[in-house]
Length: 101
Length: 210
Image 1 (cartoon, rainbow over the protein chains, first blue to last red):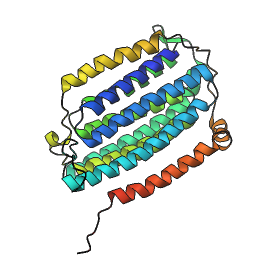
Image 2 (image 1 turned 90 degrees about the vertical axis):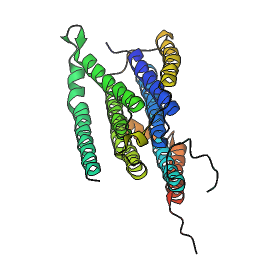
Image 3 (image 1 turned 180 degrees about the vertical axis):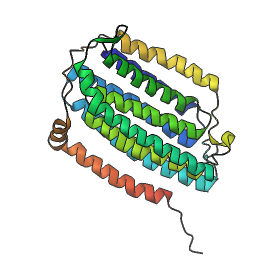
């Protein structure tokens, strides 16, 4: 029988792998992927608690808001990545260390 | 450039498969899984098997994102991770959320990420594309964080109750968005508008007057 703990383990693993991705990548796009993983881990927890503990749809509504904000974050983040690439000709985050051209 | 197009078409085919799998998960496997509780393999029932398959896809995809040297393979890992998470949502009777995951995450965010990969890095040169530093640092971070989170998740006595049977939630979510969560809903639309304008302003090329 699948219980709440199974989903919490999946969420924790997603969060940890996302954290590792953010911490170890030098590629800005890779870092954004790590952020998506972290948000997905949080979403799995939201929906699991909603299903097993609270009932109703509040947790699902929160997860939907998280998805909307993740889409916004991805759009702005990738625009920033493109701008960095135009300026520095690389997306290695160690080389993007100037506030102006 | 030819290989790029080939990979892109491969990704598009994978996305089609994902959409089909999600649809089948919700329309076919869900009712069957709800109806059957007899053991299929060993002590596992069919819902157990579905869960373990989805969880494996999700975590394996996430591991691919974290460990792959090539950024394009990282994007593919993200695809499978998001697919598995969508399946888990369907498993938790969050059908609207599963479809939203497919439409927005896989159809929108992942395509944006792929665009950024194609536009920014010379992806044929793997060494340039996604060098990760500090493999041991990553392992150390994983070893430091994962046991804490798992211990909290497994040792805390959650007030879990017997979950309600699977039921569609579309009407309830629509009502919630237009009554209790109306203000956040409108604020989210403003955020999306600001994002739209901001992304264009940031990413455009400035044309010098001279």
